[in-house]
Image 1 (cartoon, helix red, strand yellow):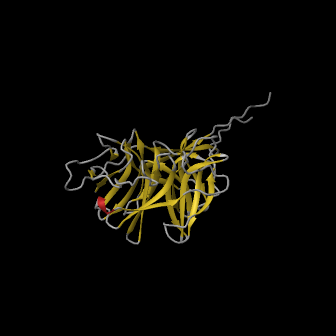
Image 2: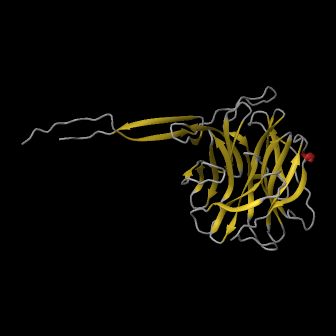
Image 3: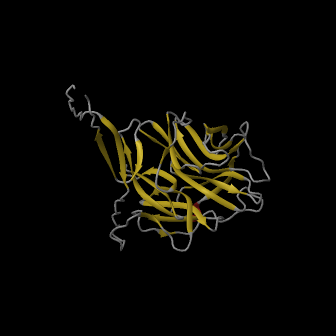
Length: 327
């Protein structure tokens, strides 16, 4: 019988496991705040609910605008110095003309700043549930009455679309990326192959005209419409986040604003995420949890290439060796 030699090889690595700790960093209280800390960060109103939202910075405050549940003819509006204690302000965009594209409801605001002007795209809904993309602007978000509406700016017209005025027609949840002197408008809707994340571009202004390119993402699920897309750039790479009914919240990585997009990866917890930076440069994400908005630090894990986003303030990597028996 040959001798059996036992060799333990410690240099082979079975795999890598990345875990994002979900503990949130307590917010430092503002000197005028009675609260010393806040865990988790976010806005948790007691008298109403929140849905799709946007967070932006202006003149020393974080502002948060969101779908008001259940009064969907206006947006909930608040501000905070520390993302912990929120000052509820008057709702915005409360007036709607009969027969307008946003006559009965407004959904899913997204806000960005450019040249001192704050632009807000959002969904307008008619009595027939026809959906369009609307635009409002403000140069002083501290005043809720400063938001000025500019009407409908986009309706899909790409080949194969399923959208028709005067009936339920999906075109909602807009978000905008400004890159390479071009405005990229992402929206969700339906075409002959199923639910899509659509893409339109404008090379002039946020008012358009917009060129509708149709789907940039066709989800894996059949007829379900994706929800709440948002997009950001990190280290020259594009990350498109959205909710797929069959998979939950996911993100895809692309080399350009229009992809091509890699296979989906999970992004947990919550849904309807927004991804943004504070003035000091750190990354955060805000997302829905039980019709309230939780805010958490976000880490880009450069252990992977391209980097992967993780919700939390710490990441741990564990190297797991494999023990092999060899004769």
